[in-house]
Image 1: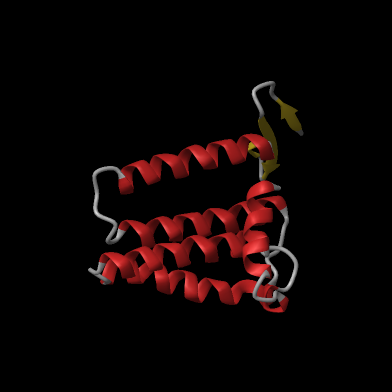
Image 2: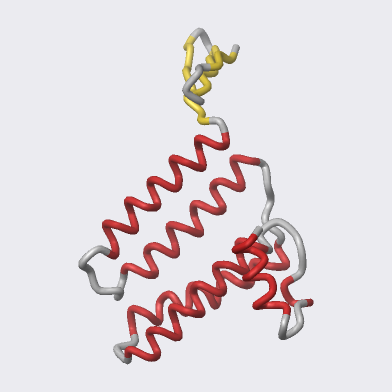
Length: 146
């Protein structure tokens, strides 16, 4: 039996061996809102008056985990052919913690933002390897606009 509540929460009760379990689940829009609030709180905790060193890789791992977790809850499978983007994304995020040069840190952050955008855009479908040189900025711009 599932009860729908007006604030976006759904309570489903299941009975197994005489034990009634209540599972609280959010509707997808409210789940996205709560996830955004939690990620915003984590970014405030990690970045406000802090050095970038370990904050960037930790936040990238949280954001990627949130992407995959939300995809799993919504029943969206990631396209395996695009998961190779995780390797350079995590590499450049880790290099922010290692490098002390300001320019190299800036380049690593630009790479993290660009690879994150490509990963989100091509999470479920498409082939990132078929993009031409002009396709990368076009995809990132289309992702911001659309």
